[in-house]
Image 1: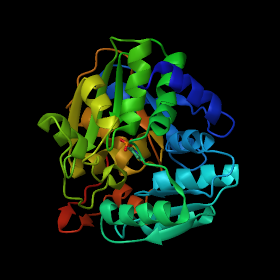
Image 2 (image 1 turned 180 degrees about the vertical axis):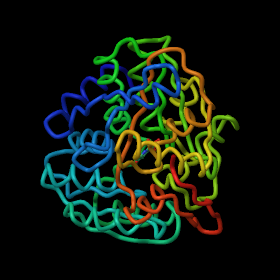
Image 3 (image 1 turned 120 degrees about the vertical axis):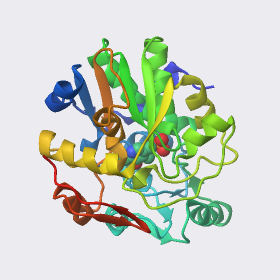
Length: 332
Ligand SMILES: *Cc1c(COP(=O)(O)O)cnc(C)c1O
């Protein structure tokens, strides 16, 4: 079982390489909600996303003579593993599906890792990762369902509450649940009455549907502005499902239009470049889906979006995602 002690240990392991990111106020969200809203800027990590934390903690726990690591990732986890492996001087092979944007593939190659692109889903990429483990002896670092990874992501909860013990609500993007599970574990251990809301996009929200079903369910993976939140939680989920089910007070969904709007707002109001996945908390605030009762923090989880797509969004152009169209609308 994971505990607060594991999260403190993770902080010691990752602190030489991961950044203790800023927690900054968002004046426009304060005007909107009447409460102080703070942004935890994980987009400022060396890889541009929080996943470096979990990856560093997992790589730190490998034996001295490891032949290397592999993982199966929609992007940011792959970048995190690549960066963490290079920091420790071990080989990394990253497996991913064709749905992953080209900027993310290039980013990982630039970090010195080998990239394997296989199939159209997370499951296809997983088969290649399994083969590398069986035939080449690499250690797989899972993106969320792993104790060391969850403890690494949980260090965000420590940093937020150490700086602002008065926070009453945390808004956390939710996909596989390593982030929300780790943060909830840390935050609820320190402040049992804190309210934690997990947020996902309404197209393919695996954890949201699994919590309601009472067991992990499969979802179809479709293109989304929040592409870092895509993918399933694993039929054999061991840790992150139970953590999210037991520790999250609420789970909520937002639409592609609400994500589009929040990316525009965060850019024009706070001048922050953020991927769709990390504005789901802001989306829900803008859409009036959450009422706040005190100082609130949300995690700006990453900035690794396709910049052509990002530019189209912030300039109000229409976006096509597979067979789904988001109508263009200028921000004002
Ligand atoms: C991975 C990721 C998430 C979700 O984290 P989980 O642990 O899978 O729930 C959110 N935002 C970004 C940018 C990510 O890369």
